[in-house]
Image (tube, rainbow, N blue to C red):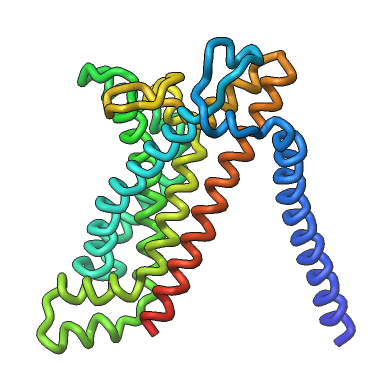
Length: 281
């Protein structure tokens, strides 16, 4: 009995320490960004595009990177959602659970989930060269879409798998087709869909490697899909590469803007998911 209590106390201490370390790391990262970036966060930073000499400390802002990031991550999230929902429905409703095809497909998406983003960027870049497409918003959206499709598929797969089997069987027993049963299940998993969208959007807007060669970089706001587009992660990278302290401070301000965007998306997603959960009850 004493040994069991000692083991329980030991692992409880480990859990508390792990919680403290992870939480402290989070607050340290956010705190560093706030402390270093807040003094350089001005209205010009969010309302103006870079002017001449912005990267050597002169006037301007990162509005081009903010809009470019929203365009890129938003477009990629929408495209990946349109592709991932049919895939997830097919894997869970049209294929037998545990079949060879289903297991192989899920294993493939697990492998794709773990592939570094630079590989997706290189693959998309090679396709762009083959098609004769230059670095542009379209190229960046394509690369990020390929990157976040595995995230979306595996998240939706787990959400659909958590739906009681009786719901599907009840719909089919009433004469519904599999697609009609799928629509019933999609209604039940709306909160999970919002979670998948949140994860995909957060990964897309914060990725650098996949858009480094595919989206290009521009000091202007892209008006067309075939124009190069700046992103906040790339803007942060270029500013941190400068030896000028003021430009480095602006990099932390840009990181603070990126963090604020993701925070807003998280809050909105949780609010919408909570409302949908109440409606489904």
